[in-house]
Image (tube, rainbow, N blue to C red; front, side, top):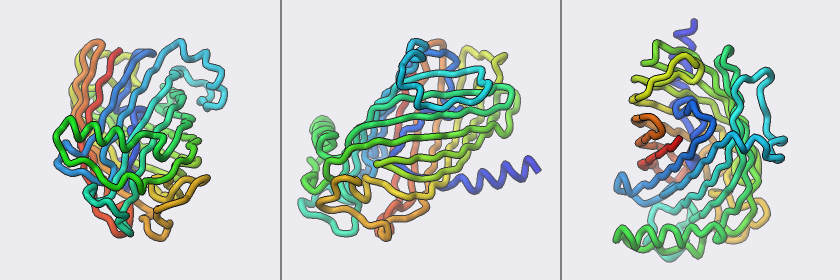
Length: 316
């Protein structure tokens, strides 16, 4: 029955949603209480320039952050034996199919710049092989997020066409978003194979959705729920996938407070969206590097699938 459940979950996890740099699954677990991780996504890595076109993430975890009074709004597991606290920064940009049109492409994805800053807590019950992640993000969507300026500078540096049409982007609107995510280990085999699944809920003025999916890793890896494992060097391949039921997405549908200008109606977006990640990780003492290929299915009914590449650097 456990094997059948594993197969079923793997098949169902071939769906998800884009615009998220997720660093809190067991795939990227770090044994230290303090670490800094820098993440970068860009579809230029695969030769395209549309939709989720770039993302930057910075995560800082520190034992000292346990004293942050705002942590009171974050959840923890009862009898947890490993709680860690961090702060996170996210910025990303989204564009329509073509950045060379100065006019609105009706039915296409709108331009959107997003900036958030948040607090995060991971709480783990090692004996039950489960982990709860909760986070609170605040920020802005719209011109204040500087999506136009960031993409324009990157295109100048890389010698690509400068984007047109940012004047039609989603208008300024505040972001307040909360995340709850629960990870459960399904199966592990002597440091060379791990399988886990998760449920996640997002609610707020930026994204409201429900997700479920799976993580798989093959190779030499420290298991997040086995403290006795302590490989100095790790090297493994991983897969991520999950299905998201989309309730609201401000980068497509406009901000809740300010919905002037061009945006899509719910009837124009897909309520279920597929996402997959395939990547490689190499970790040495005090440092790790991960490369990633992301795939997302059609987020809007008139759209198409999308690919991008990513990179994670972790220092601890």
